[in-house]
Length: 184
Image 1 (cartoon, rainbow, N blue to C red):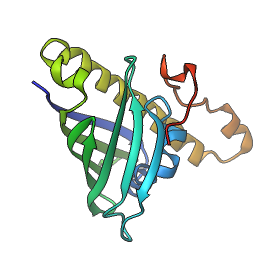
Image 2 (cartoon, rainbow, N blue to C red):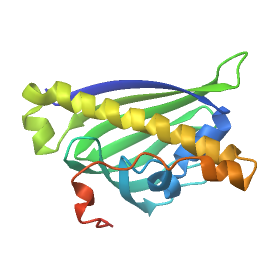
Image 3 (cartoon, one colour):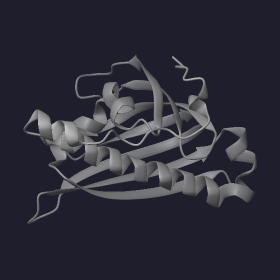
Image 4 (cartoon, helix red, strand yellow):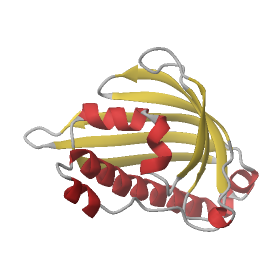
């Protein structure tokens, strides 16, 4: 009951190359997707192209619990996607894929996330709360889409005035931010 399989599909105004570069640059992840990515530390830069990049993360969704986990990039295929393996509060594999939608200026972004929960709350109460935990994941991914669209608007702004009109990305929910502590 601690197995989770999620498939997310987004459409954004962009090219696959640009979306790939944003998602691979973990140094800015907490800046543009702060509702989910609270803190991170790069443990290993990896090889040129990203394979072997090892990152420790402190994340959350809408629900009032946090997750500590790590990922290692195991495969890259610029600009169409990359794969990672996760360990920590959950263990599994995630695959990002990016492709242009023919005849449009849109990029289709998909994320296939297959994990086993290891955090006791998720692992041992999954049989009761699995739909709630799944809803929490879907909330986090909706925040990611909103945040990515805002990041793309910031990158495409032509004037300071345009840039100033773009709202900040959605912020994290309670209660982790009561102390506002960094983990790493």
